[in-house]
Image (cartoon, rainbow, N blue to C red):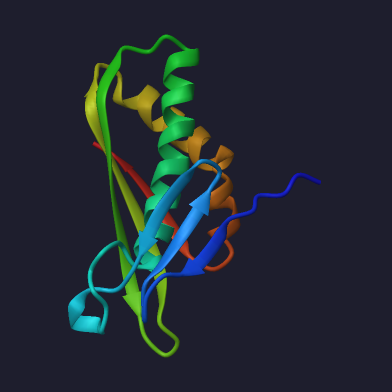
Length: 132
């Protein structure tokens, strides 16, 4: 079974650095939470990973079907809960330029089903996709 491995190393009191293939990223907290604000928090990266996974599947579906679409953007909004802190719901709002909204809704549904991150989170987090 294929594995995905990422290395996270401490680089400061609160700060760490993720090594992902040939890429690296600083993970930190905002100053208000005791960090130095040198990078996003892990929870923010979780939302970015979900949005990025969904976006790559959506763009691949658009390209494979030669759909006229451009300037696709996804706004990812996570609803935070406490005790324990977690996201209880995530909404991804898809916008862009396209002529057939029904086709985009169909491609968005397909992309969610193909997204590793969405499939992993579905049992714990309600995921909504909105195409405008």
